[in-house]
Amino acid sequence: MLLIRNTLLWALAAATLYAAVIQIFQPTFHKAPSAALTNRLFVENYVYGTPAPNIIAGSSMSQRMPAGALGPGFTNLALSGGNALTGLAIAIRSPATPRHIFIEINRLSDAADDTLLRQTFDEPAFSLRRYIFALRKSYQPLSVLYGVLRGSEREAPEPDLTESQRAGLIADTAAKLQRPIPNDALARHMDELRALITQAEERGIRPVFFEMPIEPVLSQSAQLVQLRAAVRTASPRACHLNIMIPGGAHTNDGIHLQIRDAREAAHAFRDFSGCPR
Image (tube, rainbow, N blue to C red):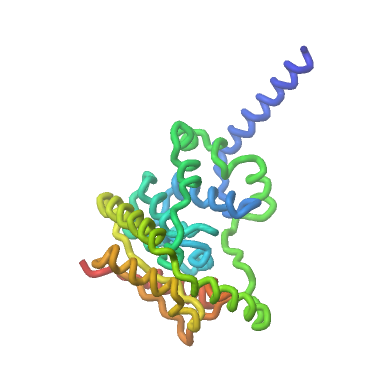
């Protein structure tokens, strides 16, 4: 019994010390052992941090843009495997009120990630994590160890692929984008988009739509044509940011920009001067 008690006391002391160190130093990391954990980390950095006045909500396509190229006026809330509906819902439910939220339309064929939203905002955990930092997913021991070993820089884009490597991936993407989105699913996502836009505007957040550039040969694929028309119908008076890549976009797989073009896309956001009222 004495051994068990002493073990428990040592464990309690270690946990208390760990929590105290995290509370004092509050390290910031931008990488985690998996894409899902990295998404949680990005979201917690946004929800419990001090985000920039302009937010980008999107998928891994928007995540390719380097933070340094976007500049300090932007927080990139694009999530790997996610879409803009999730980022938009996070921005609406978070304490901070951004000036603009930029909404990527490319992946609006999917629903918001309700699991991630519940994990982030369900009470009492949401409020407890605000004051006890060690309870955040970002500060779980494995995440902290991984962050320390990998470093704190977020910008680590996958390298550009060669022409031979790209060809097969682009062909696969083309086949996927030519499959129409089922009308009932698209209608549900547009209803969700309209509801979120209304909530954002009620909080004083100005929505701005944008389309991430893709390979020119894919730009008129069935899904993108559907999404453009659906967004115009769902939000006919919305502001749009037009992103132009000189010479046409170059991607690794048809949709994820190569590094140079990802920087070029980021400059369009940095140069944004607002939408007419």
